[in-house]
Image (cartoon, rainbow, N blue to C red; front, side, top):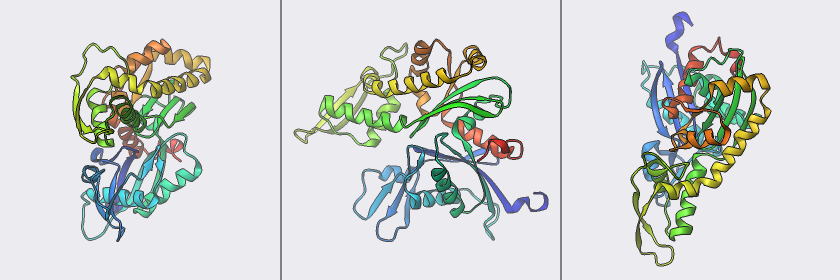
Length: 340
């Protein structure tokens, strides 16, 4: 770029169902929930990210909160564009006289169709992106974890995000086999809401279920260091009177069981497809867990017992995909073959 490098701003974006992270100059400059609040009459943006999340479930008829992404793909094109534009605006640009052209690398689920990829590209271009590159989430996660994706050896990554769980085996800079299922953080949240409604006759919102998941979420019913029970209040379905409940991690492990079984099955499906030579590499090296779902207590132990293969939770799993997207941005020319 040389002389005109200051005219171009380079951004790496992990456009997630639950959270959106933006990396600029090697640093995470935006880490916000993927949600916007929009004025129903004018269609203008009222709030974005954390501010919009605080409004979620508490708005009146003039304001609507929207999560633009569902299952890892854009569900509301206009809201997605408003969100991307708003989050880019959060980054302080070098000069106020002009807005620099944007070179962007955005990660997408490995199961994305051409239509879904086009929707992400269009949203980014409408928000000011001049050069827009795409990279698959498992590949970005592998880069973020620090794996050598170009080596002639097998690496297996399980990325449990908000909308999708991505399972992929990577070798020689390509995805050998993969599976993408719509069972991830959002489904866990719904499972918790359903469980509390059915077992305790209490209604809770998405935000409370999310808080419960973070406080006492577990994948196994026996933990060496159990978290304290979580106490919350909600309306009783039968009487509409307030009910205060204390919920333990064992109950949450039971509530999440049917969704975790689907993730188990998807991992087994990928293991069946792996060529024998790569399989040997993975058994030796283990499988890496990334994404917010990797923080579920005991998940690595559960999967290890199911498969007899070591599972490792990556360092800072929430940001692994974002870090990998940043590495891909820094080395766009080197990793051109990984881009869409």
